[in-house]
Length: 439
Ligand code: NAD
Image (tube, rainbow, N blue to C red; front, side, top):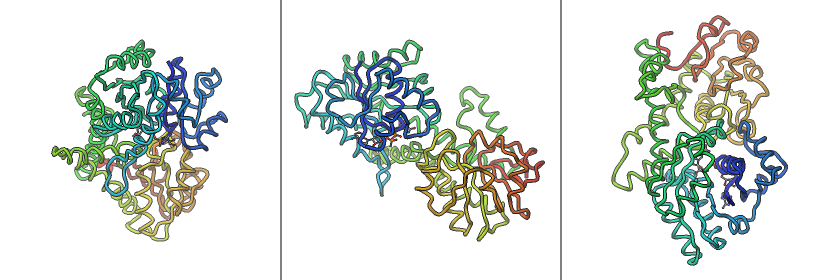
């Protein structure tokens, strides 16, 4: 099949590459000339394990192309995917649909034979109706079906998630569109990936409902962690015990500094706004958003408390800046509000992250980005682990401690990634999340 993918970001680039790897002919279109130059030069503009090799092999095989020419990519396509960003709108938290509608306007004049237009971006209910209206408005003769096919991949394991999804949701009532979608996902159906066909609005809502539920699950265990600290219980065991119940499941029950990233925060807020506007408020999700917002600053206060209540003029070393490991994405990373709170309290911040150097330099100009964890620990009164990158588990703890201010060797592990006995055995004062059993 001929596919046009509009947007070469995390979702667009991964989807385009995987579709090409299934044997389809894919043109990935982006507006950003730097992004296109990087891709054409055989490099990828994001950090995603395994993606560079897959882009390279499919580009070399002639199945994956990069272009800024939306017209020719759309003109020859059986399917056009819209995979552009839907960020939070400044000021009110609604999903900003400018990029989606602009892309719809751009492809519309070039739709010739029957084409399936698929919204892969996460969009509020009714967006598909508006995309269809825009296309009809610009090109009344266009023969197309507008379908919703939300994406569930996770950064850091995006290729695996795309190729082995828990489910593929396809929202359309159009029979022709259904069979084309089945064909495009054919190789996955052969792997027995379940396809759920729904109405378009239902598919749009399913994506938001899934993200909000996961955000709620994380927030639930985070509050439980706070309670554990007050009552002398261990959140790790509570989560393990809960997760053994198949009705609950053990995933997304890791207590930490609050959820972040390019999806959960913006999607939860967009969903609560949409629900309010529909006179059907989602109070659980509203509360989840409020708790998570407060949590990040609370985590900074935890670090300050661990330093004896005063950080003015003192160095704090930060390990990990991205919103989770194996990505360079800094969007809505918990590290940002945590670091800002520490800066507000007068701390001097030195940080290390394996992937976020460029992102951190743009977002957190006031801090020093260090080349390794040991440099971040230099003279520090405390170290705070904000992202649980694998490489932190093999740190030379003696060397790390020797770099710090000898009067205060505090390690605040906001991801519970370390064995407490190992850390205290290496001479640190250890603070974790929800480990009331250690207090
Ligand atoms: P992104 O910001 O990384 O990428 C979007 C890309 O679209 C950019 O490269 C931009 O230049 C390009 N673009 C914008 N308008 C364009 C146009 N008219 N023509 C061509 N290119 C255009 O965004 P992302 O993280 O890939 O997210 C895309 C969508 O997928 C969002 O709705 C997001 O909520 C959703 N989503 C993201 C993830 C994730 O993990 N990042 C997972 C599931 C769903």
